[in-house]
Amino acid sequence: MASDCAAFLLVILTILVPPLAVFITTGCSVDFVINIFLTILGYIPGIIHAFYVEYKYARLEREAAAVEAGTIAPVPTAY
Image (cartoon, rainbow, N blue to C red):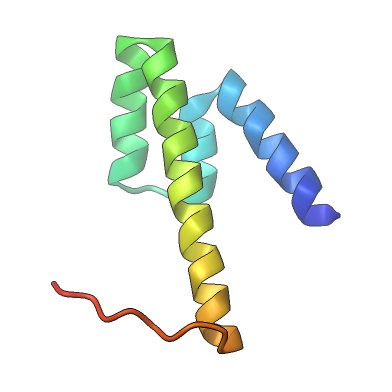
């Protein structure tokens, strides 16, 4: 329930102030700087990027939780 409320508030914040929502999601990162520039260039690109960042980080958190729970095996990564 609390997660649903937090997600709803994050969506509202994303629509109103996209860079702040990205900052809450990722911290001070490259995604945050990119979102600031996109929002300055046009409000809609900033919103689209913010939703993409939130989706990307939510997916990573779900995958990490599944690996911890043992439901899926960790995927090897190449650097």
